[in-house]
Length: 243
Ligand SMILES: Nc1nc2c(ncn2[C@@H]2O[C@H](COP(=O)(O)OP(=O)(O)OP(=O)(O)O)[C@@H](O)[C@H]2O)c(=O)[nH]1
Ligand SMILES: [Mg+2]
Image: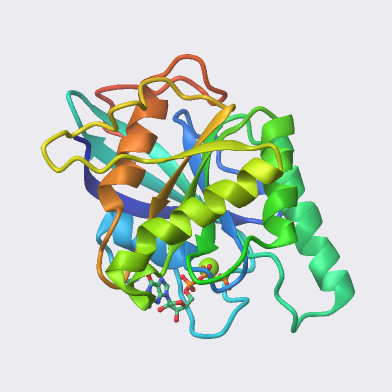
């Protein structure tokens, strides 16, 4: 099981010229404003203030890049990318269009991008914008998984039902998906050996209660270890945080 040993902020960008020229695979977080993307980055890295979070939607306005050093069977680096959320109502139409363009450009141009975590609030329905995002990721052949966030806000015995509901909704939209298995005794997702853009994994998550961290990290690790995904090959055993 992968362990994160060090994390740091690299830079923020609004367009390709501002993207850092890193040599490891990137993982990006997308979803509606306020769904908990920045919080998830802090939770995964076990840092309170690595990514900026807010009670009000629309906190993240730039593309923020982080560099993560991990230890698994080898040591290596990957990137995490915090993106502005979609569906934030209280900005002007032109501002919204600017964000959308910025985000689309990131997915098209960022060659290091190996995987995307799509966050949805476990209490809500899938948003049409989530479907647009998922279809774009499928078109671009970018691997993604779905994290149903804020699962601390519903009773524990309702979680599985909610995930199932998302699966059914996705199936209606022609997206095949599966609930990530949770075998306490088994460190790896049992059926999750090879990244696939045809089979989507879905898992519950809570930053507040620190639920679901391992499932996300296992998925990231699987993609890092895969040669088949988009994204540059990971450099192992590199002291990437020394600069
Ligand atoms: N209860 C609960 N609250 C959460 C969780 N994750 C995030 N929040 C809260 O939700 C609010 C938004 O969190 P952010 O992480 O800033 O959300 P974001 O998706 O980055 O939002 P934007 O940057 O606006 O797109 C904050 O008040 C968080 O404390 C969670 O797992 N459980
Ligand atoms: Mg944010």
